[in-house]
Image (tube, rainbow, N blue to C red; front, side, top):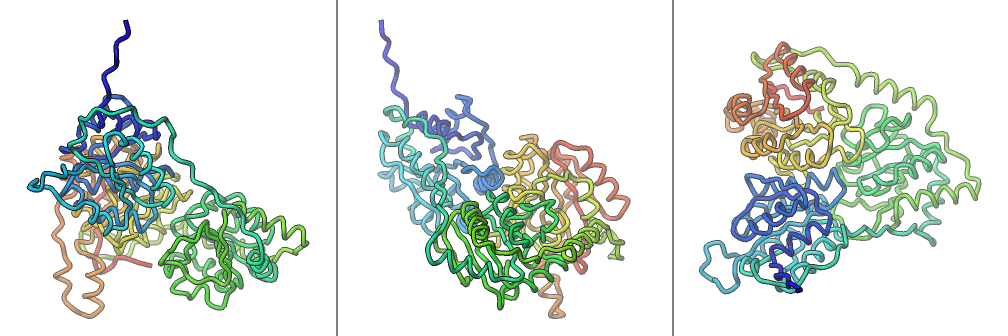
Length: 547
């Protein structure tokens, strides 16, 4: 006797579709419209579900996960206020070009008096994210697959909008397994534009190769081009660590550049930029590109409001373009430039040696300690191949310098929208995506904005996470503006709670650092390894070094 199988419901089909798309980690907060789908995902053993305490943290976690893993991040929330709670996080993802799918519930269309009813498409459109409507129960799975394809193709968050009243509707099976859609790699450029670019580079006496986040998969090809030209290599901040350990790695090109790097940038006469938007932060508002020929290679011609007008713009795959350039230079027997010479190598070695030294602690007000040597001391205790997540604040440039990473996917950038408080959510996602240690550097204001609740999420998930709170008892940027105008900074000051006591109560290990003796305890805590560890680093608000 043949027993007919009961038809599957929409929420089951959606959960299975997530599994077919290869979703291994789902971040979320359940409510009326998404709890049954989430439950079906968990019951099927399809992957890990990380329950956050605020919807914004779930979306931020998906953003952090995507930056580290290189996959499309996935989060789920319910409707109405759940969606309005994630607006800032969605904008952060849009501005960062980070692909995630947000599986979001919606109220029944006919229930006009539903308390949480809102025009969700308009909210999403305002953020710049994509919007895919679940058109019907019959198309639920196919519509969700479309959302994944759109997120990957457009490199931005896409909200998949699913009605709560259809969740228990019986429907046909979902679409076949397709996995995450592979990104289509562009071809190498050709024609007159390429010839012009090759001529500019070949005639350069001091060429420099610059890689941005859009070229992090092209390391070997870019190094081959650099060696063929005898050119040094550099990266944007978001591609930090791409050329780690190469003797002619200049490090970050821009405001974080070391002295030898600045000298090399200023002497360069041609910059070949792969996958970099050449924003004002990279070019120091044009000071680092002025009077130089700029060849920029981008994968596509999508609009980018950060883009600087280059001398010659090419569209093509970074690795393929670099390989074509090497072939053409070899064919034409173009001699190397000699820019990457022993003098430059020795200058870079001197800079690296200087960075390896911890400066003496300067005097600060009682109960605080000098920021730079304190952070460099902690750097020595933290895993070398850590993943760094930096929240936004006046501490951040020092944090990026003092806690360098060894690969681009080990730096999680949370400042695309200029919002503080995004760090802990993204750190949770980053820690879920990596097997190593994750470090969050955050200000006391940013941590209070979002950190207390989600710290318990990190503890519950047993993440290997070190949280360094740069606690100057103020909103730092505002403190600087008041003091620069010799005004009373009282309005910028924040009474600091006992972060260590709160963290301990939530299940984390914690220490408050008010001096060098406490710093030794913090080093020991970091070195212990495993679990969530919080370091409340008390700083003098008048002496937080931004250099």
